[in-house]
Image: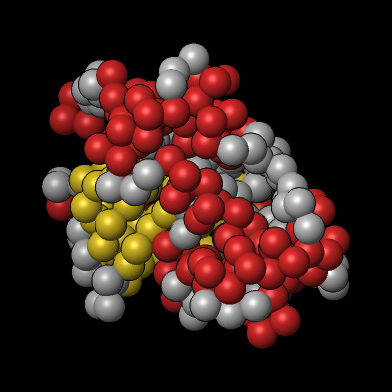
Amino acid sequence: MLHSQIQLLTLAQLSGGQDWRLALAHDRDHHLLIWITRGQGRLLLEGQRRGLGPHNALWIPARSLFAVELGYQCAGHAVLIPEDSSLPLPDTPRQLRIRDVQAQAELSALIEQTQREMQQGRPLQQDAIEAQAALMSVWLRRQIMLDEHAAARPKAGIRLSARFCALVARRTPKGGSMAEHAAELGVTPTHLTRAVKAATGKSAAALLNEYSSHAARRLLGETDQTAAEIAAFLGFGSAAYFTRFMQQHSGLPPSKLR
């Protein structure tokens, strides 16, 4: 299916059978609506680490830093919407815990109808899928409007962590050091590290390393670029340093990852 089209994938298809594709901090060039129907996991979103459970709806706009660690029994679907879609969509990431049984059934039914459209291959298939996605957008925006899903103002440390995560995604592809990010955010590296660690359970430097590792593994697997070209693209000083970095953070050199 074309990347410019709306897609519906199972969580297993979204990860491609490789946990790192979801578990490492990264961003994407398309919007994601993830509907968890079974199991538990952990989520990094808006600079904060949270728990995941059944009937959680995750809205992840394009270019938002996130990571999802799925438990063994986790199941659900993901709707991928092109970044340039004309659908009215929320601007900010959200995690919604849907307790209302009717609301749960509504989203599940929309996903099931989309799945049938994809399987049947009838004429005007993409038009029908876009119509279902429009209804999902209505469902999502209605849920966000409810008082029970009103987002509380986060504490200062979490706000700083969220700003850091947004900056990481915005500074692609070459990124920058943790000290450079701290300077751009107007705080000391020590303060940034403390705030990000408290909010996510990981240091700011660790998240930067995850982001670089994810980008590198994706490029190694999906492009014909040499390791040296990928190293230069991602801002590594040399191909040798890139090889050591990948060995340290994945356990394998670039040649083996490819």
